[in-house]
Length: 184
View 1 (cartoon, rainbow, N blue to C red):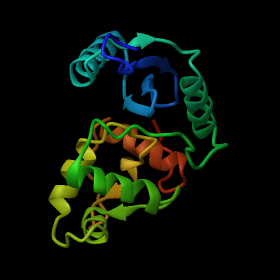
View 2 (spheres, helix red, strand yellow; view 1 turned 45 degrees about the horizontal axis):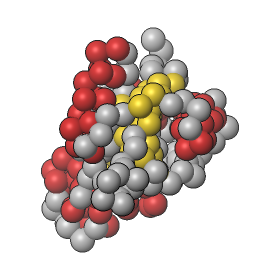
View 3 (cartoon, one colour; view 1 turned 30 degrees about the horizontal axis):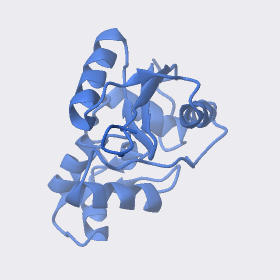
């Protein structure tokens, strides 16, 4: 506790190797708060600086923390094809409003191996015609893979954009059986 009797925010992090490259996993006492693609040294350091600024505390590397240990186990099982759903507490504090509403609907309403169009997802949250706003929400997703923004595609059959890169999106969709495995 701090000097005012409040619990101090603690942010722990680790990097886990996956079939799409290293992922940074960060958690608070409330749950997993951030997943960052391509977490090599420079990207990892930028992500940790952003987390420190947003959450008001310096993240601490702690791969053995209980929540991160479980997150690592589930991420590894997902990439091994042994897990379809993540059962982790999530800390939604890095996202709010419409974006949070869209991401919660995505997390609960679009299962493994299925995709949804940006416009369809907009309709599910009561905003028909809001496909572009849904695209912005996907780009703001602080928990990719766990909150599966890779499952959102264009209504005309296009793959759409992706914060981790289109190749990463293709690999995730191939892992889930939506697309054929990339040839290279």
